[in-house]
Image (cartoon, rainbow, N blue to C red; front, side, top):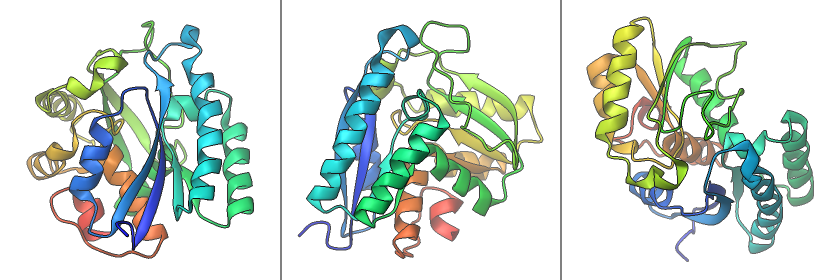
Length: 244
């Protein structure tokens, strides 16, 4: 059986999911597999109704993941998860935990926990999305934990969500450098979303800018492995997987 050590369930927001499974398997140690369902998001806009449609599908899919026998579940996509408020997602995850007896979280919480172990205090965020005020901007207010970290700056690539898989890695690399130059006090960079090609630049940014980097695929995999008691130290994708 391929996933003899762990099978990780994940609800993936993009209706076309490409980058996340590729990066997951680049990072994951042997014996770890991904049980993936793709949701309905093609446009990140309140008017499209895709966030609510995706949420409903995610809840159904996670129940089926339990039936399929996965070991752990991550709800992907902050804008999808929190589109109906924080209490809804907390209630859904707790119900799954109670019914299944397996760990369940969401990708935003994985970021928060990664920040905590890395000692993040001053955070900068780089994301593929459009800036606030655009038609393709759905905010994720819980992306950082305001009780523990200060979000001092953000950079937006301004790329439509349907095109996220085709963004060159040079784009987040450039934006991260610009952000650090504008805010030298940043100690941790978030490369928001596991659906654009950012895994390959984690080590480069940490070494060049002297910061910690929390990236989507990395944070989700790290949380799942450590929660299941799998302590493999993984090289090439930042301090989080290498040292924690």
